[in-house]
Amino acid sequence: MKVANSYIFGIKPYVPGKPIEEVKRQLKLKSVIKLASNENPYPPSPKVIAALNKTAGNINRYPDGGCFVLRQVLAKHLKVAENQLIFGNGSDEIIILAVKAFVGKGDEVIIAKPSFLIYEIAARLAGAKIHEVPLKNFRYDLQRMKAKLSKRTKIVFIGNPDNPAGTYINAKEVEDFMKTVSKDTLVFFDEAYFEYVDAQDYPDTLKLMGKYPNLMTSRTFSKIYGLAGLRIGYGIGRPEVVDILNRLREPFNVNSMAQVAATAALSDQNYYRRIAKEVQQQRQYLYRGLEAMGSKHETSFTNFILIQVKNANQTAFALLKRGVIVRDMTAWGLSNYIRVSIGTASENKRFIKVLGEVL
Image 1 (cartoon, rainbow, N blue to C red):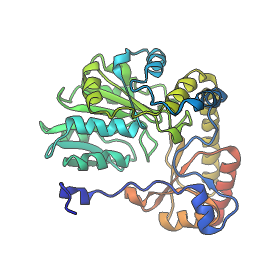
Image 2 (cartoon, one colour; image 1 turned 135 degrees about the horizontal axis):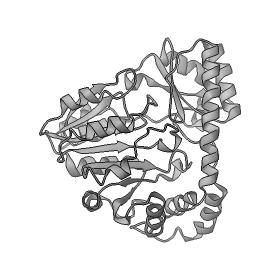
Image 3 (cartoon, rainbow, N blue to C red; image 1 turned 60 degrees about the horizontal axis):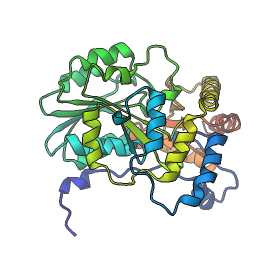
């Protein structure tokens, strides 16, 4: 069967991390831990579980297509207007909607290399010309990104903090960059991990929207809120930008259970602040363990760490055989790196022990 656009064949499909049960079946292992997909290893707030149990009997009905209750709660939490919010089936959908809305065949999109693979996949699907700007010391090279800007540039994607590097760009760097970008170019900040950042100079992109109407931010409930299995994310932008994306959004794109869970999660900030603190402590534990065995790693502001190894594929497979799933970064062009998500104390202890054996 002939496809409409031949450039589809230039897209490499996104390959997710292996599920625990699949690894158990394939390798006949009784105990497996997954530290590959940047998930929150802790369960959601008890308030979330209670809310889900309460609403489970109503799933015979279609969800609220406008996320009315969640929209009110989140707008108040973020101190933004309700019409500045758009909700998606994960923040991935917000990224894809932005590309659909503003990028046509032959237009240009600027991304970092390596970065979150969905930026490239969505842009290629739109038939865009992609400018890939290599990271500089695992940080965004905004000067080189500026040099790539043109009248054809429709979107610049900035992961902040970025996946897989785990680094961030600060408020001054963001402000300096935004001053150089045409108002006809959307600068899209993907802040999936921003709740984990404890840096004082991290930018407040929501405040910057008043000054730069071409700035948009996406965030997610998949990471610190632990709702990855329910798939819910959101975007914040100027009302006129959000209105355009809403015209492309499919009806009922966010299921009712996800809406209820996200609303309940927002009501228990103390619970999630404790998780953020625990992640910070466990990140330091992993740093100490890696340094003790002489393994180089990047300083992270997220819930994952990029670790240098001799051969990513061999190291990841050796860990897998011992029941520890990590991310082989070869698909990102980093054949000498693995990425490990920060797990619970016991999971991190097991990872350090097994990695020491493998190395």
